Amino acid sequence: MNHIQIWNAIDELAKSKGTTASGLAKISGLNPTTFNKSKRLTGYGQERWLSTQSLSKILNATNTSFSEFAKFVEEAE
Image (cartoon, rainbow, N blue to C red):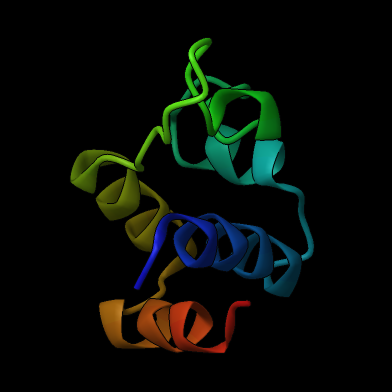
């Protein structure tokens, strides 16, 4: 599992729910910009990883199990 796979899994989860990464953040009670592509790296180019709190919120809001999310990660390039 790597940084790109995690973020691609977020995008795919959003798509599977008929929304965007921004929409996914909103329905999860997060700032709509939380999952923006521009926020996936720091200003210094370092990878910014998804917090477990944010992951928990999106899984709960979309009624997605961790196992289902893991499948998105495994399928991500």
